Every structure is written in structure tokens, then in C-alpha cells.
Image (tube, rainbow over the protein chains, first blue to last red):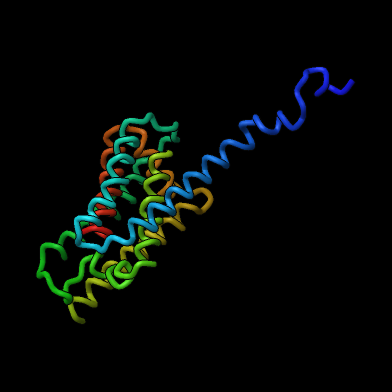
Length: 143
Length: 66
């Protein structure tokens, strides 16, 4: 007698409940749909409005909260050279941005956000911006 | 060179440095790790998570909402 008849479980049933194959892609698909829907709605908010601030915070605060509270996966220790190199580059970028920000507020001294305005000033550009930003946040929280 | 051109060149140079550092880190036998592994290591501690996620939130506010 075939094994699936002896156990009373059909092959089709096994395929339905196999967690390695079905639920994870479904969950991922649901997350992708939610992220795209969020980006499409959030991008309708023009920058420099309270609606845009709300759109960033409504996704950003819960993700930060979840990321700070959750226990991270094990990661291999890295050397001091890696930390020095990447934190140095980050500090350099932050210093340039801060220096420009504190300087004259005109088009001759553009900050990163001013330079991004031609792209993020359009709806498709904002959709891509929200997708990249939220995608990066989800990646960070899942580490 | 105008101030605007100098600032754009500065941002472009930092981006170029980051790309070069990433390529260098991905070489076999490199003593430094790629950005993704460095971030994952930073996220192991609560303080690191606060800094990294705070920077991510600030970037979203700065580029998309400010």
C-alpha cells in the first residue's frame, strides 16, 4: 500500500501544509504588496507638508520600534578596520551635509535633499524613493 | 569652480569612495567587510540599532518629508 494511504494523508495535503514551500512566499508577497501600496499612497504627499511628515513617521516609527526591540540575528564579528572605514565615510558624508545645511540657504549651496528635488519632486520619483527607503528599513529590521 | 559645483563634486566624490570601498571589501582575502556585513554587525547591539535605525529614519525625513 502506498505510504500516503497508510498515513491517511494525501500528497496534496502535504503540499498544502509544507511550511518550507508555501507560507514564506505568501508572507513575502503580502509584505511586497503592502510596501508597494504604501509607496503609491505616501508618494501622493508632496514634500514640505505635514502629510509627507506623517507618511514617513507612520512607517518609520513602528519599524524603528520593532528593530530596536527585536533580538538581532547572529552576525560574524568584524574587524576595527571595517568599522573605521564605513563609519569614517558616513561621518564624512554627514559633515559635508551638515556644513552645507548650516551655510547659506540658496540654490548655490545645495544639500543632498535639494539635489534630489528634481527626482523626488515628481510622483514616480517619490514612489521609487519611498520604495527604496522602506525597503532599506525592512532589510535593517530583518538583520 | 562655483560653490554649487564644488558641493556636487564633494557628494560625488564621497559616493565614488563608497563604491570603491565596497568593491575593495568584496575582493577575496580583503581585510575589510562590505557595508551590509558591517551594518549587520552594528545591529547586534542595542546602541548600534538605535544609531543605524535613527539614521535611516532621519534620511527618510530629510529626503521625503522635510
